Image 1 (tube, rainbow, N blue to C red):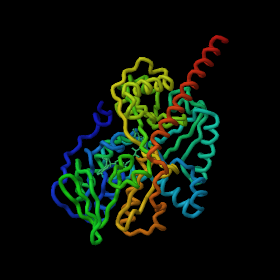
Image 2 (cartoon, protein in one colour):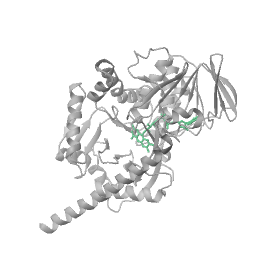
Image 3 (cartoon, rainbow, N blue to C red):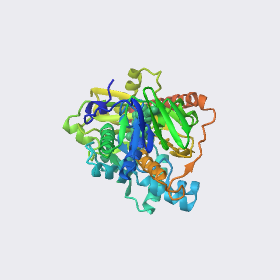
Image 4 (tube, rainbow, N blue to C red):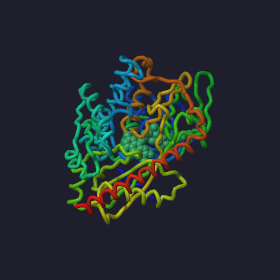
Length: 435
Ligand SMILES: Cc1cc2nc3c(=O)[nH]c(=O)nc-3n(C[C@H](O)[C@H](O)[C@H](O)COP(=O)(O)OP(=O)(O)OC[C@H]3O[C@@H](n4cnc5c(N)ncnc54)[C@H](O)[C@@H]3O)c2cc1C
């Protein structure tokens, strides 16, 4: 089934397939947010860039995601400082926090038509223990001057339109975009600055000769002194060690019909995006045409789409019982790249070859930041000045079996979630009987 974003994106322009031989100063493999952000920042610096993608624009995570612009990474700022030391850790916190400013700045600068809304991002808590962790997070960001608010049960119910949560936080830095229109806008900006983008042009062979990289595609080749790999969860055999640094985890979304005005005003009335703290987090937002879009992780290729969709309809009902009987118009899925340390990685694979990937479900802002980091590194910024660790490639141990491990963990969490739902229903019934 086509995704909501595919059906409602600003028109894509036709991009050619690479045929014959091309030369450029930098070749970028992968035309998602990472690759196009790198391309855009390089083009701005006057560098000649070629970008190639195996598929059509928008068929990777950047055209399929929830469009939630989330500041930061999974780890809290104090944790990052503990992991990397006070100086580099503080720099890293600043780098990852800059994502939403960069995203909305590019949208403004290149007048990207992508339904951008910057009313904040909400993380609602599904348990008291999650709320305790959130209050620590809020205090850490507040200490660093970030515009964040801790929310109690009543405040979160008003902001989300659901009684399901016991509190949460609102991060005013975040927002939402139509993810595929944002991607198309980036591509248009790259093309306007002279960057050349080719689709249906998979890199199938890579070799180095005389200080240059030669990348072969089915019907052409590119020769460039510098190459950036930006293939995230869709990394294939081309550079197998890089592929094995991430675990691709499926994420699935459904979208309702446009909601009637009264219902629309009762759900996320201020237009934020939200991702909750449930074991298998659920993320939701309204689209510009007033549909509820909800997603979660963990449905594998072998799960029939109808089964995954039904699971999401139940989640919508549980969080927003007022949507009983609503029609669903779209469902779709994509792959999220998870890393062992829950951090994105910037690798220097060889002189003149970089890779950036592994956003753990927070790539809308972070991949754009990564693209800028990769561009700056190509332009000669030292690893120390970058504000982000440049790390060696460390494939995940027993990567071949990781899919099985993730599947088992997810099935276990789905079972826990089902049991908790049954327990909550029984508790409600008991309270009703007692009243
Ligand atoms: C369903 C879903 C929901 C999500 N929701 C959110 C969200 O709400 N907020 C958030 O912050 N993040 C979210 N994410 C994560 C976010 O979408 C990704 O982190 C981000 O898009 C990664 O961008 P990228 O450019 O690195 O990779 P991608 O956009 O995946 O692009 C990689 C590209 O590489 C290409 N490629 C692979 N191999 C080759 C090759 N050999 N030659 C040429 N090209 C190749 C692929 O075709 C693909 O187009 C979500 C992801 C999914 C799947």
